[in-house]
Structures are given as C-alpha cells and as structure tokens.
Image (cartoon, rainbow, N blue to C red; front, side, top):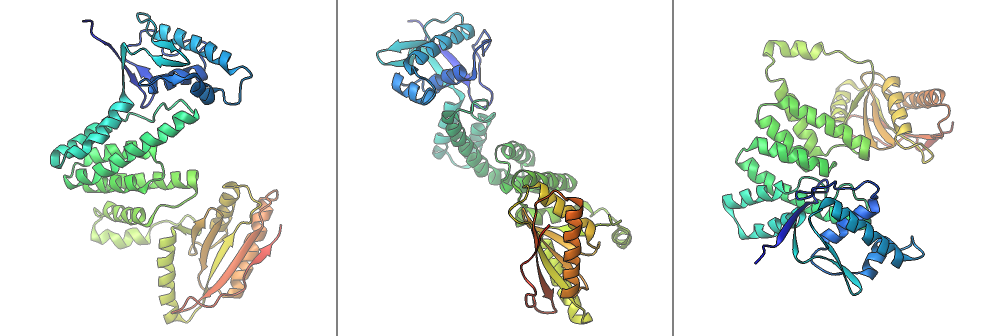
Length: 399
C-alpha cells in the first residue's frame, strides 16, 4: 500500500512550506489568490462550499462572483503546480464545493500549536513546564503575518491569545527555578506580540536585575516607556515604575559611600523643569507640604490642558516643550494624559501662578502661531497639611 504523502505548511509567521520546490508565490499571483490558497489550506479538513468562498472573497466586489471564483481556482491550481510540480489535483472540485485532496495529508504548525496547548492539562510538575516550553516553540510569529483579510486577522488574534497565555503561565515557573535566560528570551518575543503589556517587561526587568544587570533593566524600562507614549500615549504602571527605581538603585550600588554626596550634589541640571511620573510627582508634593509646614511659605499646583481642536500628539509635545523650557528647574511636571499636565510652582502664590500660566500661554501661541490649541488652566494653592481650596478655575485663554 502506497504511503500517504504529507505536506507541512508553516502558518505561524511567514507563510512557507517545507516540500515546496517552486516559488511559494508565483510571479503575477496577487494577495487575494494567496489568501484564497491559505484559506483552503487552513480549512483542509472539510469541503468548502462555493457560497462560502464567494461570501468570503467577493461579498461586494464582483458582478459575476461565480465566474470570479472559477478564475481564482484556476490561478490557485497554477500556484500549487508551481509549488509542487510532482503533485497533481491538490485542489479538487466536488458538486457545489471545493476540497483539499484527501490523498495528500496536510500538517500545519498552527494545528500542532493548538494541540500542544490542549494537551497541557494532562501534565503536572516538571513535565508540565517542559510541555509549556515545547508548545511555545511552535509560535514563530503571528498567524499568516502578511495576510490582512478579515478571516486571517480573527484567527491571528486567537493564536496570539493562546501564545500570550502560554507565556504568562510559563514565566512564574521559570522564575521559581531562576532560569533567567529563558525568562528574558520569552519576554522579548512576547513583547513584540503585545507591545503594551507590562507583564513581560516586569519579568524581563526582574530577570536582568537577578542576573546582576540592573543597567540593562533600566534600558529596557526606558525603551518600553518611550514606546508606550509614542504608540498609546500612556505611562508605565506603578509596578513597572517600582522595579525601575530598584534597578536605578542597584545600578549605583558600586559607588563608594564617600562619593555618594558628591555624586548627588554634582549632578548637572539641564536647565529645564523637572519632568517625572505622576507617582514621583505625588512624592515631591508630599515633601513640599512638609517643607511648607516649617517655612510658612506658599506653593501652588496647576493643571494645564489642551482643548479638543488640537493636532493629536503634536500639540501635546509642543505644550510639554513650553512647560519644560518655560518653568524653573525646581518645578516638577508630570503628564496626566495625552493632552494635560500637572505641575507645582514652589514658593508661588495663586496670583503668581496665574501670571506664570498667562506667560506660558502667550509663549505657546507665539512659538506655534498656527496651532488651534485653546489651553486651559486650573490653579490651586498648596498649603501645609492640606491640599488647599481650589482657586480660580477653568480659565480659557484663546489664541
């Protein structure tokens, strides 16, 4: 009895086939034909009706979808001949439907990945961890990463969720065994799938710190923080910030005690206001309130916000620049969201704070005269032992 021929397709990552001899994408074959072929491969275990294929690929784009389907089948068969010149009739026609030739067995890495996930429940202990790691190795990239068709995108999200859940199940087990190199490797790959997840950054930074590389942990933090703002205009979570503080502290552990005061005192200022995270800003305000209780002086808080008629990100960066360059080096500034900031004016009364706000507004519109931003300010006194009563509110300064 002749052995069944097996063809293995890689769908997780770039589309490829181990057994293909010809080009995997024939010259002149468009994205739609390739997507059609991939759809047939993904659904190789069943017969696919003509109605389903037309609904999937020609829902609103053809006056004669039946003829378009026939032409597409012709193109795809030619593509298969180019990929597998020794094979005949890989895509067969049945009454009212199409199917993969049952005499040719298909093996898909996506199915192997899914099966590996399903079988995890059968194991425990050390075997469980090794099975987790084995399942993760199947995921070499997003499902059909070059295919943006709706059917592919939905499956891509499904496999991404499976993969990310696997990683989250694996990392604490590796951490218990102090397998730091593997932790970092998984975090780096998972971070490319879910850019905004703090879970993988936390494990990666903890692993680097445990390996004695706090400086690398700081670099990871800085890259992650910049990416979060550029892509999503959000700040890292409190947990990420705390690990960053730990990494910064450990990075300076090699400094001799004699040099610490000198190091702190001689740190050069860049001439701009102090930009910090909101949690750090809260700590600075708390210290300032203690100082005020002894000195009897006054300080003020202010919230500066952009209106709705702004250019996203662009006007926010402009405002941030004006704040950092227009305030004193001792004035802390923190971002609240994509278009608003909170700042503290040390030693300033509410009246003085409003004068500063007016100056900042004039500076912004002088430098960026074409901006349609309407900046609003809210000022509140900061008094010893209390947040103070809100002062003048909602002042809008039009350009």
